[in-house]
Length: 189
Image 1: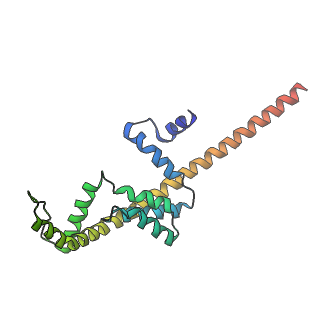
Image 2 (image 1 turned 135 degrees about the vertical axis):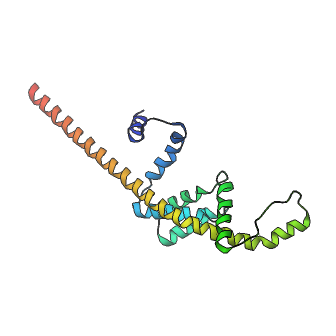
Image 3 (image 1 turned 30 degrees about the vertical axis):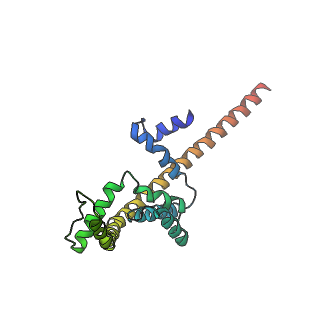
């Protein structure tokens, strides 16, 4: 009950989708560690999340975060920018950017009927498509990582400032209550 009141103070009124996203956001803000390392982990996760390797993105991001000594949890959270709901938007965009970057003129289109020859053609063009997706992912992922870093860092530091203020106010209120109790005890005697 008190937590809901506190959330309302921090974020305003509850609003459907925002309320649904608030819990993961709150958990992200409460990750322990240096804000810079947490933000760097998030940036790394966002960058890796733009790669076409959806099945292994989290492992790659956590491995790289461990090497760089950045926050592994935030790196794992960041890769979720690409998920089954966002992949149909992200991968065509990265393909488009990558193909424009390299002047690739052959757009990839699914045929009306799949036959063995077309499957062989897709397998043969897989390295090109993968290279285009990687390049497009890097071009999109780099600015996304920079923005993600600054947003994460600002959000974490602002949250921690608010918590410090609340703690100070709580201690001050506790001291005032304690002083008023002592004063009442003295007055009774």
